[in-house]
Amino acid sequence: MTIIDYDRIAREYSRHRRVHPEVLRRLLFDGGLTGDRRVLELGCGTGNYTTAIRKAIGCGCWGIDPSIEMLREATARCPAARFQVGRAEVFGFPAETFDLVFSVDVIHHVEDRPAYFREAHRVLTSGGRLCTVTDSEEIIRTRVPLARYFPETIDVELQRYPRSRT
Image (tube, rainbow, N blue to C red; front, side, top):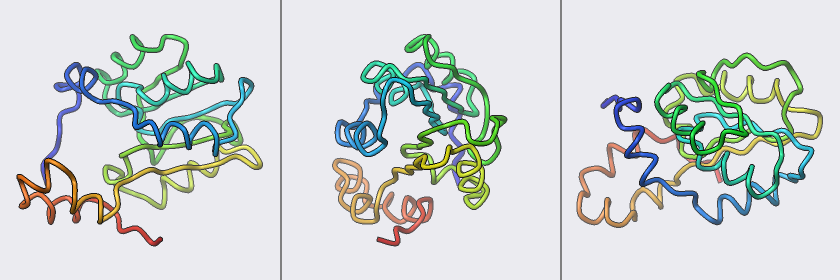
């Protein structure tokens, strides 16, 4: 498996990655977010979603990521949010802190998925929500241009991503 040095690519990653409008819409509306809510993004990278949520709702936003340089980009993008180094499987927040815990395109990087879900559940408030956004097998098989021009990547990607149960 190829390991990506996110510290090395953070600046370019920040320049090119964008929020998916439908994912953002669903986080905002299905997450039941209002200005008094507290949100945690696991694997926040350069803070695209954290920043978008903060700008749209004005709620309290936190993000964790293992890459210091990705967090540096996130902090520059959204100084009002709080970012810290951490992994999705273990993070140092008190129980029942967040109304929404989410990740986007991160679950395939998580080494211990049961720990990820236990920890997310632990920090959720009563009635809080957890959202894990990832690519389905269909999306991986039909990505343009990746699947079309580099079909050899499909099997590699299918091995990295968890299978969807829905």
